[in-house]
Image (tube, rainbow, N blue to C red; front, top):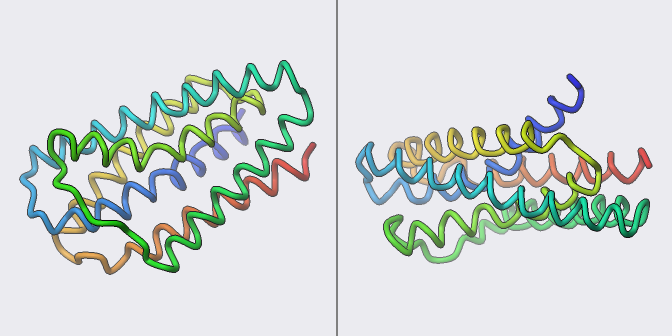
Length: 181
């Protein structure tokens, strides 16, 4: 149980680094603390529901396809981690939307889409759903807040490195999943 909790916390941190990275860039909007609070909660909410949908889908696939589904989940983590790593190196953020209304929805959805893929893998692997969702939601909320607050101060200094770190962690877990089956 302790090993699984540590793994889930590290994955949650890796996924939250995307929100942290984008939050750094959004920090230049000079948001009020109330706005930062709401943005963090919204991103945390999406980081609970997207992996839940992924976990449910992954469990269905696991029952239907067994070991092949576990290999597919490991490959998915490898690809996702590599993509996040390369994106961090290229520093390829698109244009930023204002984090209010539809812009907030798009922001929260875009930084939580990768958590659906990780949830899919966790569902295939059979991870504890409640623990995973709490870890993901908490990490995403806190890292979003930190990114937005730091972004007000340093405006993009850490952005590249945070996404590279998150991608590396997901890639490593993909390897772990592939080689423990």
